[in-house]
Length: 296
Ligand code: IMP
Ligand code: MG
Image (cartoon, rainbow, N blue to C red; front, side):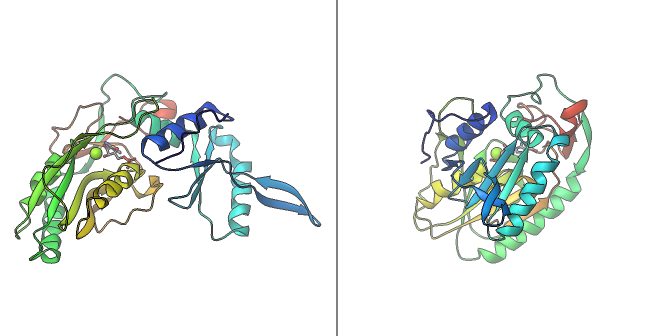
C-alpha cells in the first residue's frame, strides 16, 4: 500500500490532491525523489529538472503542471531535454487540463458541473457496438474453449456490455460482478463495496471493463484479482482511452480505442445519468476550459 506522506509539504495543493488520488488507488509514490541534470557549464550542473512524482510500481515519473497551457512551453523544452538525456525513463506531463479532468471525473474542480450537459455527437451506434461485441465474443470463445472462464465485471458501467458480450460467447462460462467505491476527496482507499461470489482460485478469469482511462482502477482490480490465485487473468475492455493512461496494463481484448473525450451511454454515466442511451455518445463541450468535456 502507498506510503501516506501527508505531513509532507507540497509545492502546490494540486500535488497534494494528486497524491491522495494515488493513495486511494494504492499506487505507491515518491515526491520529487530525483533531479535530472539538463544543462552543464563544463562540469558544473547549472540546470536540473525534478519531476513531482515517481511511481515505482509503474516505473513512471509524473510532472504535474498547473500552469496555464501557454506557459508550459519552457517546461516542455526542459522535459524534452531530460528525455533525450535519459532515453530509458518514462515521464508523463499532466497539464492543468488533464488534472481538472481527472478531478472532474470524481465530481470535483472547475470542470465538474451539476447541470446535465447535452450530447455532442454519437461515437458508436448500436450496430457498431453489436458488431464489435460479436467479434470479441468469437475471439473469447476460441481462446477460452474448454477453460470455463469466469467473466468478472465491475459495476455499474459494465452491465450493458457484459450482458451483450456473454451472449456472444459460445463456450461454457460463468459471470460475476463486484463493486468498488470511488475517490471522494478524503484519505481513504478503494473499498470493495460488493465482493465476488465465485471463488476464483484456479479459474481462468477474464476481467471485463466498460472503459479504461488512467488505468488506476484496473490496476487496483488486477492486483485484487491476482491475489485470489486464478489460473489466468486477462482483460477485456469495450473502450480504451489510451491517451490518458498512467499505468501500463496489458489488455488482451479491446473493443475500440477512443480519443480523449468524455463518453456516455450504453451503461456509461455522467453523474449517474445517460446510462440508458442505447449508443455511446460524446458529451457536449462547455465553454472555455471545459471545452474538453465535463466528467463524473
Ligand atoms: P480510470 O481508473 O481512470 O481508468 O477510470 C476508469 C473509470 O472511470 C471507468 O470505470 C469509468 O467509471 C470512469 N470513466 C472514465 N472515463 C469515462 C468516460 O469517458 N465516461 C464515463 N465514465 C468514464
Ligand atoms: Mg467503471
